[in-house]
Length: 171
Image (cartoon, rainbow, N blue to C red; front, top):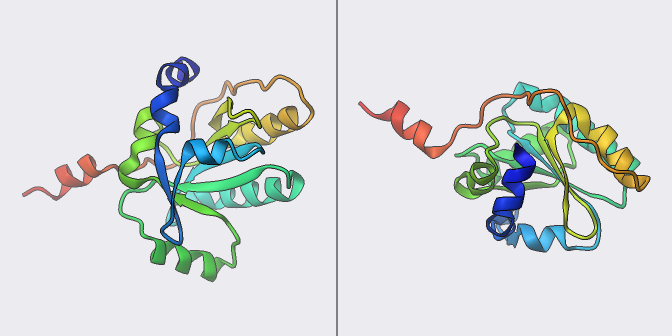
């Protein structure tokens, strides 16, 4: 169960360092304790499944301006210049973070894009699940209700980690 995993690894997870598009390093702990709810959605600039995720995340950002919405580019090998070019071509104002070497995704067992994670204003994880359940979870969080975890499976494209690239590129 993902919630049990979160409880067991919470210290290791919050210590993860993420990187903003401008190269600035930021800890997950810093982001989740910024005084407003934090929403991260794993995302890749070349993923077809993420197209709907972009729209969903941007719509939710308009609906809940008090929440910090970020895309977490979890695909190993993407770089800031490539992602910035994609965002400009698509005319997207999508705040993007990088997960160097897939540290956060590995710790949480995230293997597909469009996985959503939500922390409340106290920095407590309230949602870990698929994109389809995110709007309902944010509505519940916004209204002060208990957030109900999703019962549908994760969807999205597989995230490639370094070890997969190493195996594939070996002669």
